[in-house]
Length: 112
Length: 114
Image (cartoon, rainbow over all chains, first blue to last red; front, side):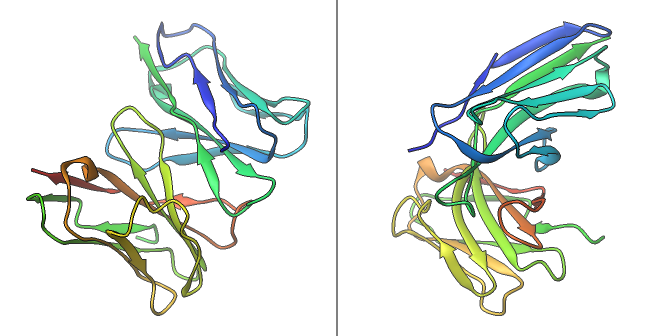
């Protein structure tokens, strides 16, 4: 069974600070996605990474896929209150690529 | 709007009752997914449709859960003999292609079994 772990589970920071959240697995994924979810809404896709070692930037967000395609990180620079939400990573299996497995999420609170 | 819609937004039922949850995907999307999300957890895969057929139903927890998509568009998730442990938010997502294409999620149906 493929599992994704995320750390930290909860994170509370001041506006303007930097932060990194992590997504780890013992399994290899063909691709990995990061989503952000706000209360009462479904997750919204932020980025998909496919190649080991790949780095993608989305404004103040930087996503990295591990060389072995087993882990990923999300770094936010100068956090804003609008970044508050649940950050989920999700991996597509190499063997059952139609099924996406989600991690438990990191709940981020950015305090003004 | 052109997004994924789910009805009802909230459903409260009693233990042992039957419920149906509906998902309207984005028009033209052939892939449709159902997930279940418990408080403090990420979405848990239940079933995936490609067109009218269930391509992967390995996530359905037991035979009380069943889903259909008879015309390849709207899908209904059916839960028989509901149990308190079925309480969760049920999310639906659609995409134009499976796996590598973006999944667009609906707002979910919050099911509460008393």
